Length: 110
Image 1: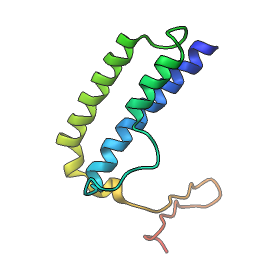
Image 2: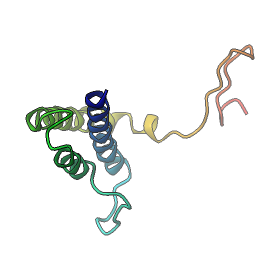
Image 3: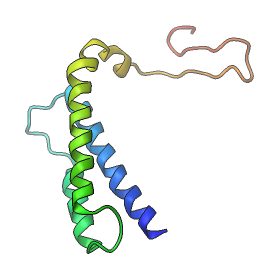
Image 4: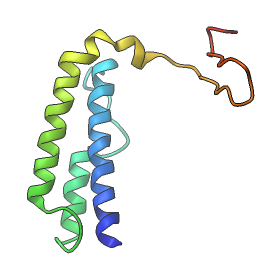
């Protein structure tokens, strides 16, 4: 159980790093704005040190996962996102048709 919880924590922080990269691409800051939370990768290494290698991914597994996700994210930023930014900047709601006849899309249907 502890192994699964530790790995889940590592993975969540890795996905936060991916999300941060995408957010920085869509809405870049001037570098002066500092977030209220530590960098996700720094948090991964602090967690890895705190667990003293008793539970969760090894250092090598973490490095492999980070390398894969950083490559995937860079490919996404280079090859997909520039052509589909509107899909990620859209804000609104989609209502499921379970209690209505037709799905209604916020800001489109009303």
